Length: 474
Image (cartoon, rainbow, N blue to C red; front, top):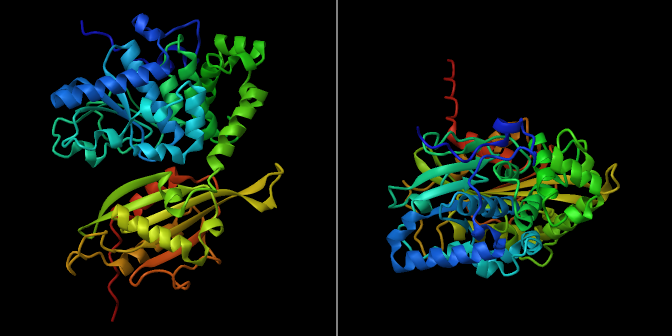
């Protein structure tokens, strides 16, 4: 009889009830499982780097877990937790890799705060970054697990034909890949990918790891706010984690008891949201995430950024989406936006750049007494040569005007985003764009549509063939 897969989702066992009284079947943790999360990370990093530096082929013995390249708290926590689960419980050498340069960790104060809460006080020394593996070509490992995204980047497949995806946990649009190799392969709606990872964790989860996963769920769901992004999966996962986290002692005793027993049937769906300790933690995380006044335009663009690649009319088009937590007027007037955006496009070799802003309008207050939540989108299309490279030949260059028209039409026709032209940011009239560049700004009326909505829209605009023109009648 084939061995039973030790990874089983809570939905198969307890109908999404994260119950301490009905544990997941699993091997008993060894004494190594008693080490702290920081010790696990630093030891794993040291051993992995020693292995691949001494004998690169040893990288094949490891599984590398990655969140998406934006490096947000959800990706960070999910990759760390899944690596811990595979290594400490199932004894499979696994290392989390942050798709960031080491110094980029400083761009996200909320990540640093969450890591400190989990006892990871030296993240530049305890975590593995792209900086650490830059000198290896091809990438030294072949087995990968993806969290918070579901497509492996070209960096890991280049000259690496044995690259294989062994697991996927995500809450973005399913691209339909790795169905034959990934187990588990969970790509389902949730407010936070960390909730899917929590559903795989044992009841004896260490407090430091439970705390890290909890912070990711709280920041992604605004503290489990009713009517917001939190789904049942997030509420149950947060209850499971909170009762095991370092914040358990700050919660009402009856609430902790109920959560340990059954978060679905016990305290009620809003009990954790209403707990003062959870509200305070959420407020701190949100404040740190929004504290970006010290960042330059380049830093704002790269702190929460993702690359995409499409083939449009037979030509490869690289596009980027940057999420920025401040309004355009705070840093984009007087040509500052155009200057930073064009420089970033050259650095990343982009043809299309979309900047998605999200902020509270201090001049307009909503029913909660807080500034009204607003979103904007700003787009540039520019086929400039990257620094140090020659301009593409005419036959290889992208038709910027045609591509921009296609993008504007697709964005403005989309009924979900509800974009309206931005009256204060008409980039082409502002005369701050370089020759040949096209730009357009929008106010986004659907403030609930995040990059998770915009990215598939962009893909559809560029990958779905345009309808053929109707022949003119004589």
